[in-house]
Length: 294
Image (cartoon, rainbow, N blue to C red; front, side, top):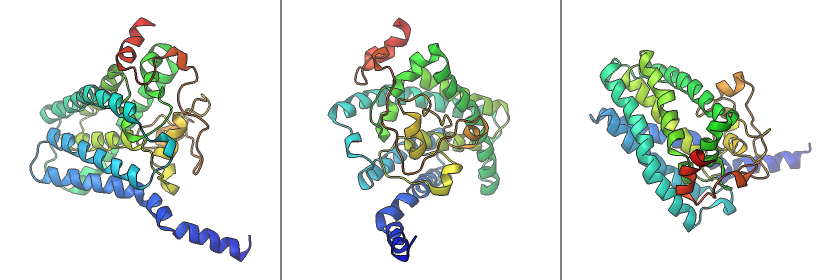
């Protein structure tokens, strides 16, 4: 490679958009965690912290999509906003019910860490995140393996473009049971209420962040945590590319051989291989009913 090529590469890496793309993930997560921690330190209940931080995170991700769009043809139209808004109100209530149920159980049954050592809390939350992600990994993977569970989970894969708000396109039972499967065992294992709440927040953050239509480049972090560059492959219409079943960390995909990371690349098409098996992405009521009528 000649010197001119090296200079060109250096300039491309130094351009503002490139820099913004590379810091987008840590900056967004850091900002949202700081917001949540500030609310917690103010004396808000864990349930309230989760609820408020959830909406703050969505607002930050929406701004990220505006500032660093990945694909223009993936920008949602009015029908997308309308149907996902309906999913958001219905599923949002159900999902938060699941997470708040876990948080409430944790508050009453799990030991409280209080405002103790932040490093100890971070370590405990990281372990809780790993355990919860393992449980969520297998619930998610079973949703692809089992023909029965695919009737429910496949609804999430019907949309043919990815953007943050389409994460709401999901069957309510898939969402609710998934929240309980990955959360309730953490209480049984003795994690503190604060550690569980932090782990749930980080997991919820990644579930939406993975779908953002933003030019986010994970770099070396992409071998440790999962983001949009991984999840686009998960939504590929090709079964051999529809991998990356973890929610937050890449560990379990590495362990079970389902990790796929191709920085700078994107699948040819996203959606389901056989769309005729599901209602259209804008048919919410039929999507809710279809698993019981097929």
